[in-house]
Image (tube, rainbow, N blue to C red; front, side, top):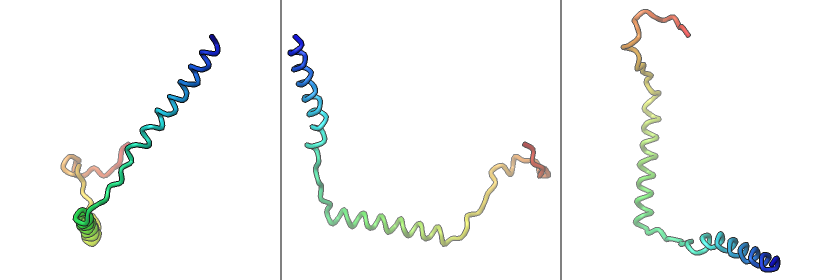
Length: 80
C-alpha cells in the first residue's frame, strides 16, 4: 500500500509541476507594429512633449487659496 502512495505522490507532483509550466509556454505571441501605428504613437508622444514644454514655459504656477472666502478677514494667527 505504501508503494502505491509513493507512486501516486510522484505522479501528482509531476502533473502539478507541468501544469504550472504549461501557461508560460503557449501564449507568447510576438506582434509586429505597423508603420501606421508607429507614426500614430510618435504623433501622440510629440503632442505630449509639446504640452509639457508649454506648461513649463508659462512660468510658475499661481498659488490659490481655496479657503479664502471662508476664513475671516483678519485672522492671521495660527491656532493648532
